[in-house]
Amino acid sequence: MNTTAKTPIVLIHGLWMTPKSWDTWAERFRGAGHQVIVPGWPGIDDRTVDDIRRNPAALKGIGLKQIADNYERVIRQLPQKPIIIGHSFGGVLTQMLADRGLGVAYVGVAPGQTAGVTTLPLSTLWTGTPILSNPFGINGAKPLSKRHFHFTFGNDLPRAESDKLWEEFAVNSYNRVFFEGVTSVLNEKGGVTHVDYSRTERAPFLVITGEIDHVVPPAIGKAIVKKYRSSGSPAIVDYKEYAGRTHRLVSQDGWEEIADYALEWATTHAVQPVREPEAVK
Image (cartoon, rainbow, N blue to C red; front, top):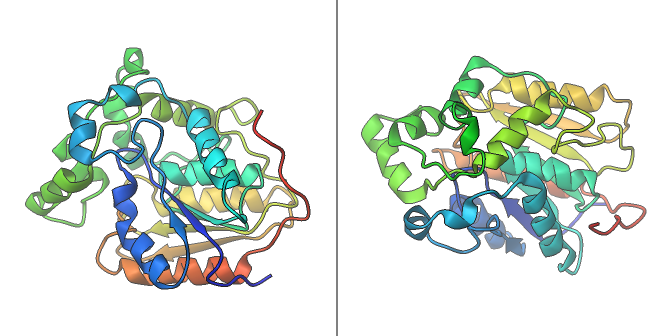
């Protein structure tokens, strides 16, 4: 069915970010008549960037399943199933929620790969080096340096401009989330990010990537789409790539074009599942 502005939208932020990273798209979608819900990950909730940096203890030890379960609780309180849009690791969570049948359409904006999608370009591996280099820190909450932020988020900008964005947006990592995401890549059946790619009743899913993204380059986005399409499922999985765009797709100059495309695609393709999803166990 084709949805209207009454369809709520849930936006899921990524690692090193807070709900503030979605201010651009959230405001635009609300202006289009949608209810927009932007929950923070457990430990972030509605806290400010400065507060999280001062005291990141609440982020320690939290993993992807705990975060996904929290989003499911939020979604089940809505009067109807939403469009779910996630950025980066939020795109991993979007796929996990899609596997639970919680939305009417899904958009992964530079989404990380779920279990069994083994494409890992060198630039992607480098983004995780500060965390993965210390396996004993799996339950930690490591800060993101300005230098590494420039590589991962601000690679289209001079360093000084990238540093300003770091001050405004960047928070500590959930180290466990990164470890779980990486170790799941080679463990399709048992990884934390396992999804059923062959699920027939999954609502349509759109993958969006940026040409010069160091974290989730187009090779990963295409590999995700190929994994779903080769599963035998008839569910719709589409792909859209933007030239000259970095991992900062939700706020880089020209973000409006991407937001409008994502919204139009989602509202056009949204469907109501035949049956209600199972409850959280």
